[in-house]
Length: 146
Ligand code: HEC
Image 1: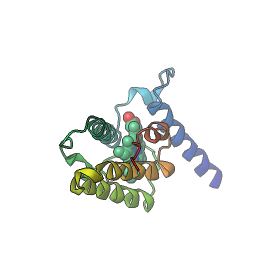
Image 2 (image 1 turned 90 degrees about the horizontal axis):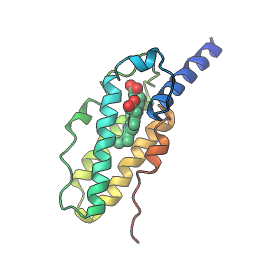
Image 3 (image 1 turned 60 degrees about the horizontal axis):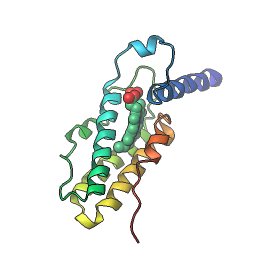
Image 4 (image 1 turned 45 degrees about the vertical axis):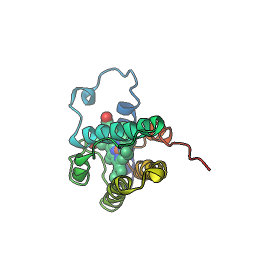
């Protein structure tokens, strides 16, 4: 029982890594299935964070539009057979939502710090779920002055 659980987790991790690393893999069943609702939401979240970072670099006055879709984070359907931990996923998910909200409430001078806290909340969840995108997430931080 224990062994089969470990084997299943490994499959989930590999799948999550392979799809996101954009490796040229020979097409498997998984490549033929459409991305899950949660995977699509993650792409929206990643694109949102990238555009916040680009705006910080340009010194934009405004943040990109509030990513309203993040309210579905705890209910979006994940990829079939992916292990979503019933304790840590909602904990990290709620933390990410709080970090998005804090970013939009932050004074302009505090935005870079608030943005880095948001990226850290991505990384926190990804250490326990779907480690594939971690390389990408680690590159998302901005350097803070001081
Ligand atoms: C609460 C946990 C959690 C948080 C927070 C989180 N992720 Fe994810 N992420 C996941 C899970 C689980 C998946 C796998 C989704 C699936 O395949 O259904 C995923 C998948 C992804 C993917 C791959 C999507 C695809 O195309 O298959 C990327 C990229 C990603 N996340 C980036 C991010 C970024 C960037 C952030 C922060 C802005 C973030 N994630 C925040 C749990 C999280």
